[in-house]
Amino acid sequence: MLSSDFANLASEAERMLNCGADWLHMDIMDGHFVPNLTIGAPVIESLRKHTKAYLDCHLMVTNPLDYVEPLGKAGASGFTFHVEASRENWRELIQRIKSKGMRPGVALNPGTPIEEVYPLVEFENPVEMVLVLTVEPGFGGQKFMADMMDKVKTLRKKYPSLDIEVDGGLGPSTIDMAASAGANCIVAGSSVFGAPEPSHIISLMRRSVEECQKNN
Ligand SMILES: O=C(CO)[C@H](O)[C@H](O)COP(=O)(O)O
Image (cartoon, rainbow, N blue to C red):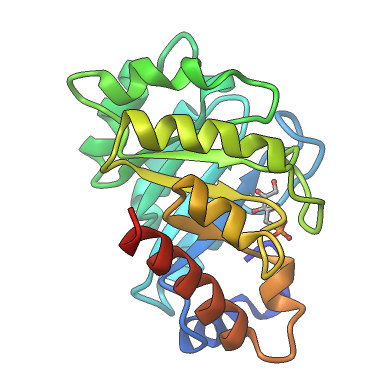
């Protein structure tokens, strides 16, 4: 939704769901962890009044723990925090996210080694999704970093049933790389919002993921 018209968020959300999107990906940026400032719990709460859709919240914030309670109350569905922002408290974070009825995920920046997320996936109370950033976080419309696909391949090999989300620069020219590496949750902003027929882009990307899943 980062590429949507924020002044018309509810209708933009409805438009994307009507075009075939499964989830609404909500980029929460604090202007500190990343050099951009977007939305927070009040906007999630407002949007929740207009949709029952899965709100996949990606927290690009320095103190994710501070957001658990407000986002849980606001009606967030998924809560994906950054491994770089939770080195001291990820166990508590996961527990608190689940206690508020949200699904925990962990994200990692392009420069962070994939090994850093293994303990969170293998923990007795694990995260349920890993988000591999394929751009530097902060802004939509950047170029897909194909070299991040090694991380996706490694994760898919190690955890066959894990949800692996890719985020940044996904569209018709990059989806096959992500899908064949093993990604099954695709975040796409500018390629979808910038298309004359967003539904075509969404179904093309869905087909690519389904084909790769069938062949593996
Ligand atoms: O998390 C993000 C940036 O931090 C965005 O979700 C991501 O970049 C998607 O936008 P686009 O598809 O335009 O690259």
